[in-house]
Image (cartoon, rainbow, N blue to C red; front, side):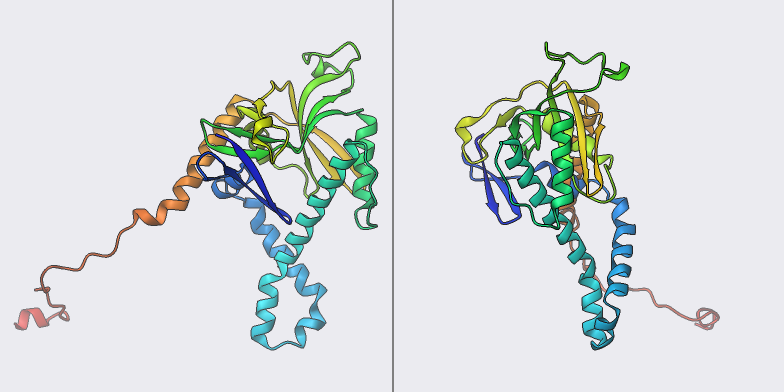
Length: 283
């Protein structure tokens, strides 16, 4: 199995160059197989917010056009959030690499929060936006940050090995920029990355693949306009097993319609006649 990542704007996908097959990514697997309960309320609220924010504009449209606008309103908010997250990730990658970035005013609070994290936890990143994959379970993903950080000297971190400078080494961190915080599915996402078999530092060069390094700690970095939070996340073998179950649910769901056949036509005409009460006695 040799993986190459294809990028097209904000979207990307993974190809196994040995077979030509498209391999599902970790976030796609979670999207296909894990219920998104929070999205139900979000969808309703986003539609209502769109209606309030565009009230006058909607009032001038014919009913059918107004309905179409309302149906698509939540996707505008979703696309805006996804685009913001992608840009923050890319700028964070460049900042970690020591590059200078020109930050749009809209993204400045997020990037400033990212910089505060880098400074305050003294991140020593070794791999950023590296592809990881499992040949045995046929999935791929792109991790955000793998490296070393300076965690505080607190009892809950005493079990973690540190180097001579006090850094906890080989940590895996996933960065999020959403408004709602860190959801439980992040544990499955990190477990998918953690227990992948290979890491490919260059997403476009399969020959850079190495065995996936052992991970000592997993966490999520929640980046907000008003600051950031580094949050521990449990992503062990149990969560990886749950991730594989989710993968199988997604596989079933994609092919579920194929399990249902066509209705069977009766081989003979019906001999039964439906009659009103009393008519049968008369006959």
